[in-house]
Image (tube, rainbow, N blue to C red; front, top):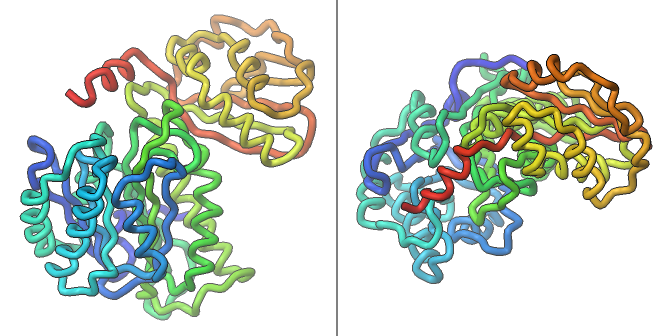
Length: 402
């Protein structure tokens, strides 16, 4: 897959902007993503039973399978605010539509930040009016910055899918994301907005999104906690004027490959930027009985705070890995498990290989760690993405509200 410069505004006829409207003390806190024409749109949202006002609103709006703009605020989650929160999300949507002079049904909303505080609507409406006049094809990085909360880095990417359009350009996919803490599998705590100039119907678009999210964002965990605000939205405006992408065609496969690359890239960026994280960690499960078991095993290890703290301390305590597998609610053969860390075998048939403690300690100091586990009971595999857990994570979350 060819990575190209840019992000969410790289596909044709998309523009974006980001600015400071006053929710935060000084950092950018309002973003706008806009397609020059209505786009086929699909979304996936948190499975938490407690849902933010924007999730409830977007779920209704996306029944139309179309949108043209997404207005996003950070610093305030607009969750658990009752009818006031729902009214404010709707007002954000309708006021944005008014400022852009587009159909009010075609504006989606997203929020992220502190739960339980009302949105400062006077500041937000003033910001919406201003940002509507600042949309630009160079605005991806500003939008990417404006959606961050405890993140330390901007997360954006664009790829060339290699699919020919009727314009001189190949179809492109661009995206931005945020996420750093309160993240667990099944629509992990994140916001991600994806654009493409592909001409594609809703069913193909939604199926591709669901397939890619299931193996990327849904396999991501920072701390095992799930937010009320998790949102992934993809907009396809057809600006490349390609022959419509259909199931079971080479073009569809290329599109899914491109989308999966984008989602995987952002998933790794979020994992590496976990609150207090010092290492990106991949947990690769092999030899599982079925895909469900493979996913559960990978998640169980990725969610283990004991495994994550051991990795932070460069402690080769592989017993914690075995224990987390045993707690995964899957059928395993406890005496047949093999484990390697960055290709260094440390466990064979659930017994230590008498590896060099000094060598493994050195390996565990690396910034990227891959734990490979072979259950040796089948042919299925899966990968989960996480990070280590440090004292800094506790400090960040002990003082998040204050």
